[in-house]
Figure 1 (cartoon, helix red, strand yellow):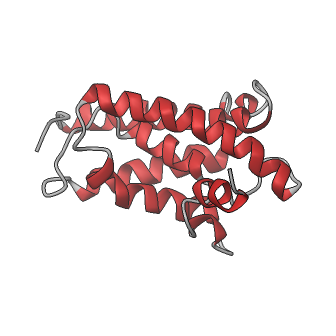
Figure 2 (cartoon, helix red, strand yellow):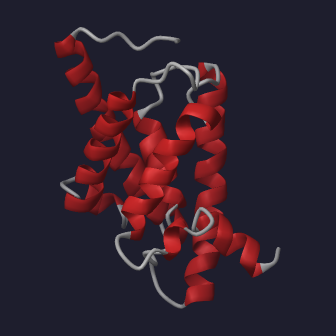
Length: 163
């Protein structure tokens, strides 16, 4: 596969090329895409898509590390997409009814855990080699953010639903 396709996929187009905080740009793009590409899907399709993106992302990130000559390059942001979409997994909405405050909360919680990297997020980077570790730490950060968002929604009486 041509390297420009692999790098374009890993960078989510141009989001990963941002000179300032490419991970934040990748997460923002993922949140903007979610109402059209992720949230309207049935639960089984969301799970399947996340699994597929995790595997393809790990393979592509491994190749990107070789192409770019460094471990966990900042411009690889496919892991941010998987991580923040994991936070949004239990929430099903059509593009017309998505609560934008939910997307903002998912964005902020995910970025917090992805940037601060509390245990076990930092440790998970080393659990698997290459691109697998690149992807896994964002999955762990996404899981922690998902727990927090779920608790926040429960406290506020918000029920995940279909809009």
